[in-house]
Amino acid sequence: MGAMSESVSVRCPACRREHVYTAPAYPCACGAPVAPPLDPAGTATPVTHRAWDDEWVGVRCGACDHESQWPRPELGCPCGTVLLVPVARTATRDEAQPPRTPAPRRPFQPVMIRTARDAVTAAAVYLRWLGYRDVHRSGRRPTSGVAVTADGLLAQVDPTVEPASLRDVECLWLTAMAESVPCVYFTLAGYSPDARARADSLGVPLFVLDLTGTPQPVNSLADELDAAGAS
Image (cartoon, rainbow, N blue to C red; front, side, top):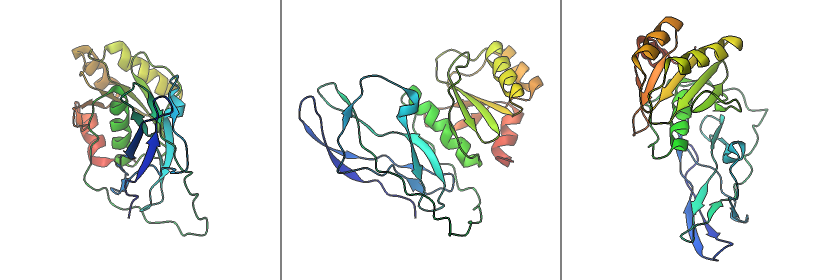
């Protein structure tokens, strides 16, 4: 079975308050719940600056043994300090273990969207559910939103309140063409009419993320991807 959520005691170094923190569980592509393994002997550290690569941690699913990148656990103290909760090292794969047969996709389990970070997580959860491997945030900077890459795919997640424009869709497509991979677009605010028409002509699947974290297909290409999954 997948890893269950666990709790640890966390002390804020700024005000010395003691908190009990429970790690959030996210659905693996196989459907099992996965939670970051917390380190009860570790010390929480304040967040003094944001670096996106530092906000993700590798977590291995106990059910299918696949490792994915998930948001690093954080705790907001009432004093105003944001704390990084220490995470234990993920166990490595037993190389002697025989490979497992991939299981059929289980019903999609969305991640509620409350922040821009949640939108990126929701899109990553969906891509893993489709069957894409090595899903993680890319260092490239798209015209808007956040770039997410997977093995054989480039995605863009736009958590802003403005509909994605024709230029946004074209820039994503051009970047994907340069890397010889297909692409997909996720947004919270939808797409302008010319962006939708251009996406259809370029072969870009378009999704809108609702606040439950469920991607809703906008064009037929997205319908096909949702039905077929990663090829």
